[in-house]
Length: 85
Image 1 (spheres, helix red, strand yellow):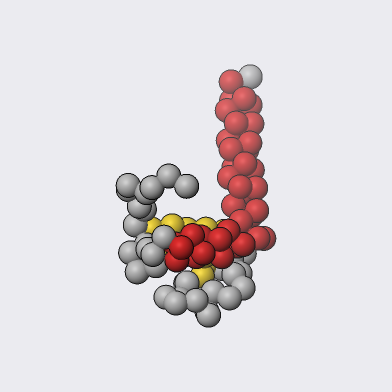
Image 2 (tube, one colour):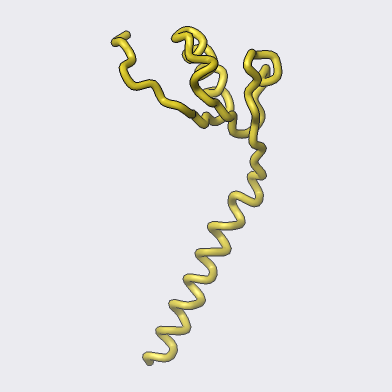
């Protein structure tokens, strides 16, 4: 592995990638220099030192926002087409 010359100061990793990131950060001796936040459920997040805070996701809400935005865009586009006809 090439030497790290510019280590990140923070990482956010989804699910299982978090554990890999913890291992890499510890292997490099950066566990007290790099902030790490896990996204969604991360097994063992509470048993590593320093601990890894986890942000939960709501899959239903994640899907609802794009649907809502697309619906509004489609409605606005249809209204513009109706006015221009």
